[in-house]
Image (cartoon, rainbow, N blue to C red; front, side):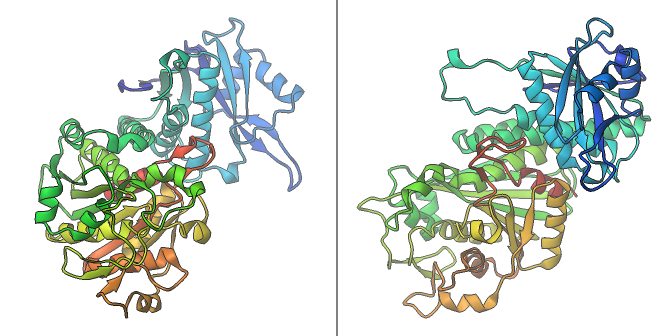
Length: 504
C-alpha cells in the first residue's frame, strides 16, 4: 500500500528479517535499562523488533558500540552505524526508546520525528523497520505505528513557502518500509492506522496555511458541502457582531460553512465552530507589540475545523458534521468600532463592546446562533480566545470548558490518547455577574481576572441548552520554540484529538 504525499508509506507484510531488508537505513530500537534511581542505565537491544538478530548478523558490532560509547538508550538518542556491506542496508540507526515504564505513543512520535531528521541529515531515501506484533504497555501495534508515522510527518515539516527556492534543499527521506508478521485482521488495523496517521499528520502540518486556500477547493478535494457568505449575505443573516468586528478592515468578511454527510443515516449531528480572525491587532484596544507578531495565528480555530473536516470525510465517519467559520481581520480604522459601542447580535441580544480586543467571542456568538438553527446534538467551538490561558495552563495545554461534564471527560480522554494535553477549567457561574449591569444586555468582558473562564461564560450565553464544548487553544495552537516534533509556529494542536474524539 502506497500513500502519495511527502512520505510514501510502503507496507510490506511478511517474515523478512531486519538484517535482510534492502534499504538505506534499518532501525534497531533499544530500551534504557537501569538498576536504580541514580543509575543512568545502558541500552538493551530487543528480540521482537529484530535488533538482537541484526547485531548477530553484524558480528556483535551494535553491542560493541553500546558498550564502548556507553550508549544509554535515552528517548530519541541515536547512533549511526555503517554496515560496511555486511547486510543489504547501508546504515543501521540505533535508536533509544527510553525507560520501559515511561514508554508511550508520544515517545514514539518523538522517535519518529528524530528518525525523519536523521534520515534527511544522512541523505537516506528510505528507512525500514519491524513492527513488534505484541502489545507494549497496553499499546497495540496499530496504535504505535500511527504515532510513529505522525512523528515522521510532523518532524519532516518545514514552513518554507516564502523562501527562495534556490536556497531550499529538498528532503531525501521519502519512503518507509514496515515489516509486520501479524494475522490478516491485525494487518488491516495497521493499514487503517497508517491511513489515519498520514491524513492527520499531513493536515496538522499544513494548518497554518489552511485559510489561505479557497474553501471551495478544500470542499471539492474532500467532497464536502460548501457555502460561503459574503458581506451582503452576512448582513441578511443579521450577524451584527461579525460585521462590527470587520468594520475596521479593508478586507471583506466571510462566513464559511462546510458540511459532511455520511452515506448512511447519521448517528449524531455535530457542529464545529472555529474562530477565523486572520489578523488581530486588538482594534482600538491595541495589543502590545510583543504580542502582535503571532496574531496571524488567530485563525487557528477555523484552520483546525477545515483540517478536521478533510480528515473526517476521508475516514468516512458515521456522524453528520457541519463546520462554521466566521472570518475577518480585527483592525484599526476610522470606521472601526470603538469601546463603549453597543451592537445587536444575530440572536437579538445587545452587546456593549467594552474591549475591542475581545473580538473572538463576538464573531463566535453569531456563528453559534447560526449553527443552532440546524439543531445539532453537540456544538464544539475551537478558538484562540484568551491570553489568560497562558497563566492558567502554560504553553502546551488546551483549556476545556463546557456545560456537559460527560462530554468534557470524553474529549479529554481522546486528547490524552493522542498526547495533546487538555485540562478542564471550571465554568464558575459567579463570574457571570460581571457581564451585566451596563447599558446593553451584556458586555463582551467581565470584571473577573479569570479571563479564560469568563470568555467561555460569554459564549455560553449564546449556546442555549445544547450540549457544548469550548476549546481555548490560544497557547497550544502556537509554539514560540521548536519542540520534539513541532516546529516553531502553528502546531495544529487539537487536530488529532478532535479526529479521535469524533471517530470514537
